[in-house]
Image (cartoon, rainbow, N blue to C red; front, side, top):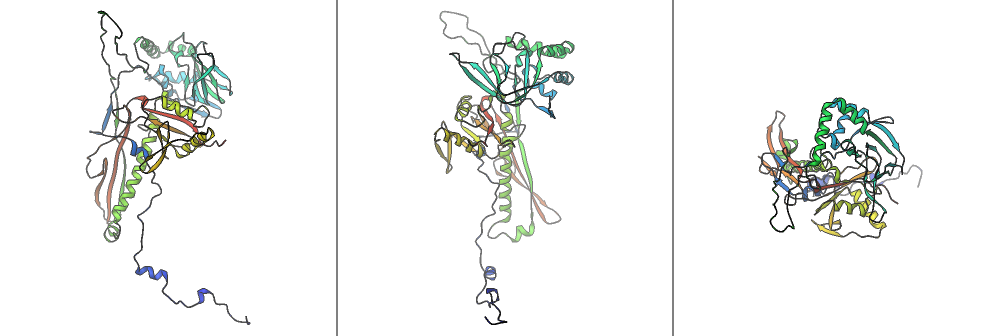
Amino acid sequence: MSVGEEVRTEQDKPQQSLGTAAARNLATTTKSAPQMQEISSRWLLRMLPWVNVQGGTYRVNRRLTYAVGDGRITFVKTGDRVEVIPAELTELPALRSYEDEEVLSELAQRCQQREFAAGNVIASFGSQTDEVYLLAHGRVEKIGTGPYGEDESLGVLADGAYLGEQALLDADAIWEYTARAVTACTVLVLSRQDAELVAERADSLREHLEQLRAIPGQRTNKYGEKEIDLAAGHSGEPDIPHTFVDYEARPREYELSVAQTVLRIHTRVADLYNQPMNQTEQQLRLTVEALKERQEHELINNREFGLLNNCEYDQRLQPHDGVPSPDDMDELLCRRRGTKLFLAHPRAISAFGRELNKRGLVPETIEMAGNRIPTWRGVPIFPCNKIPVTEARTTSIIAMRTGEADQGVIGLQQAGIPDEIEPSLSCRFMGINEQAIIKYLVTAYYSAAVLVPDALGVLENVEIGRWR
């Protein structure tokens, strides 16, 4: 190359044909409909039986039950000091429906904090039950004696649980199992002696406890319901018992919840840019998808009707080793008849699969709507990314029986609402404002009801980050 000769690049060469950028102006492009990453499989909405509700309210009538309490207790932590919220003491069966805040505050102040190391025995089988233990943090295993004298696990308790609650009602109560700390535990202890001292000064508490002590005289079945007197296996002419079935005086009512948004579209867009896709239809489609995602999230997590918050305490289980093992899934299954499905976060399904791999087990799968769904004991395990995963990398697995006929879990909706585009979902025209913006009110009405407590169970505090 001689001195002063310039090097010509591709950009310097003269254009010899029509460029692609200009050609696109004369071409009809092939395009997709607007995509949305938020859309999930929403198996809960697809598998839940939906019941049409008239008047926006669904009432669940049950037999009269004397079983009370069975809730979870909340604590406040300040540094290394833990205190129980006074109102949370009403989750104890002996204090259910008790409303005197001053007395509850005094009881809360008398709770003493104790620390137990892993392996320490908190209470021994056969000893006197004279203290109530409120588990603020940690895991406690209940151990009983098997038919041949060996130890057997009766369950695991975690944060918010309590032990020895019968101490407040029965002075002769004894521990029917041994409670042993699996991990380091922080426990608040309320002694029967302190409770009696408070009751001596508070007439309302004393009368409340006396009323509850009279309840065990009622004949009840193992579920706490008033027993129906029957006679069987008799001969001759004995007196046949008389009976009736009593109902709850104040049954729970579920009101339909709502998810709403106002969709806005400029008239110029709606008028001019509708080929080949209708802009209004696409905007509405994506809005409805977002509403359904929120609907499923609420059905799982809502404090009033969400499945995680409406599971009874005795239907909440803790994994024995932290990870979701086949044994834990079997325990979850055996708590109810006719379990129709599991719901689990995809990472929980992955953790369960690792445990199956360790044992050399291969789960069966079934085909649902073109998807291969894993099963356990024939019950499908559906993924649901709305089930929360905590910072400690723990989550929950839900098991439920569904349908009104099976006294299960049902979804609630009201079909036939004005401007309905899907059952219980409407799009109502709200007019055009001075900026030429068209407005549509998009509304979804929904809720969920648990007809009987054993229709829903939850395996809590499932570890999903253990790989060995």
